[in-house]
Length: 305
Image (cartoon, rainbow, N blue to C red):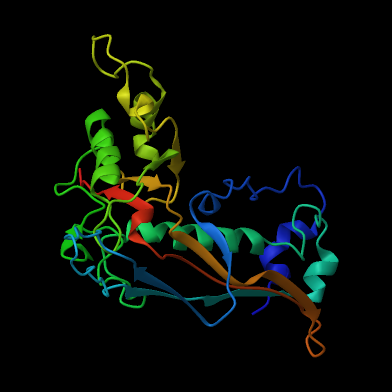
């Protein structure tokens, strides 16, 4: 049933001091974490390939060793999904609405509905980050895992035991990214956090503030510097995400751009009048998917209390 006069009965009469219900939106957050990437096909496939392994010693007069193990290792799939929403409103309701500036028939919040949808979908990549999504395929592991396979070994982008956010655990994350992250041939890469790469839920914003903003070590009487800020690859700023569902989990974004927002069709709206009912129909459509194409994009810790 279309929105009709019974649903806006008090907006049909003069005398209302104010019409409320619309509030400022939270500034878009997913674009801070996910790289907007145009999609050009039904399924976007990202192949991970291995290059050369370590060079080999050569004996005088001896044959040069060959390394023919290069080639494809994993493929990460991203199939954009369709999102739509519409509403209908009667001609009578439009005509008799005396507060069209506040309750505008052609703008009843579709933009916000889509914005909130993509915020939730995007940060569910983190909220569900320890659960393997078989549609992505990839290396057969969840985004955050202790067992990402590389040639002859495994690599981790989470602590072996979930740890609360504090100075020590953040420093350990910085060290883990730098020391333990390797390519598909198990060779070191330049793993570094983003300088503003700490992402926390609202419940941890005070902890993040103390860790990243104090020049000296937080919570101590010593005159030691706060090394999480000053070491190479240190973190000097943080981001509070309103869409993280855990009050305890926290994340560090790396400089590797593995978080993608694939967009096949950008947000669009349309409206028309139904010839039979005279109802105004308004709809919106978008086709996209937030996902990841490389586990080396982030480090996460998932304590439960």
